[in-house]
Image (cartoon, helix red, strand yellow):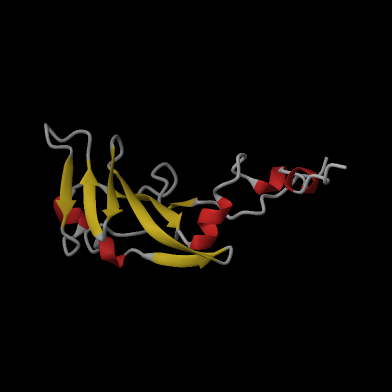
Length: 140
């Protein structure tokens, strides 16, 4: 059986920066890294992807820094009471989050007018819709 590839690029790409079981640490040194030192965008599948989330890990717990309206917002479910805090982009990751390292990066496809027109399909994946379904024969 031949595998059918999706025609549309994925809306989200996850990049594993570290695997603590194999590497023991992140490829990004948190004591020297700022959130702005992480690649903020790249092009793949002829689409531009923008940094959406930096996932941090300390060996037993995850937290994340999300890009919201051009600012960085830290979410940590372990914070007592206030689970969201604005993150200063000039802060070193290791200075504020001792013991955490960058584990994964999530990049979201840049939303364009082309994406909006593609998102109106019922299936969400045009690759599984046949040409006959897209263009049914005219009624006689």
